[in-house]
Image 1 (spheres, rainbow, N blue to C red):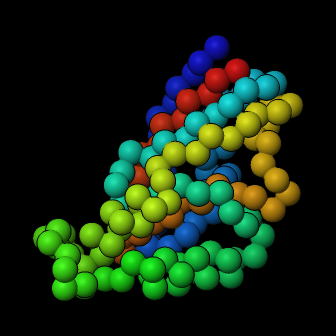
Image 2 (cartoon, rainbow, N blue to C red):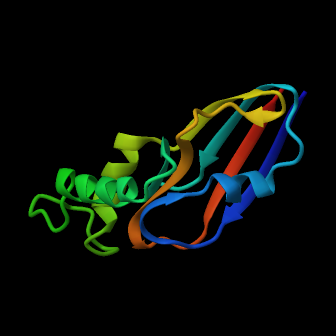
Length: 136
């Protein structure tokens, strides 16, 4: 069986946001075993799995990404939408727009300290559309 659900996340400011519970609130009962693929339909944010306990990991990740891909570089040509636009596209390509997570026992089979992140790279990205494909 394959099921697909599309939903919007609440808008968030720039940063790394733990969204595991919000994603789960949009999914129906999961099969006993299978996979769920999450795909974000945008080019200025990303999805990732990382530390779900200590919030300093999220702020550190933000600092790391902002140092890796800086704003206002003189060689950027794509600048019409502001100083955070081109860096957000580069950060999206570095991180990725989809995740595949195993389902075991009707639950996401994440590690003890793992959670799903929305990596918002725009100052004000708005609500983000997610397509969840459940296979099981």
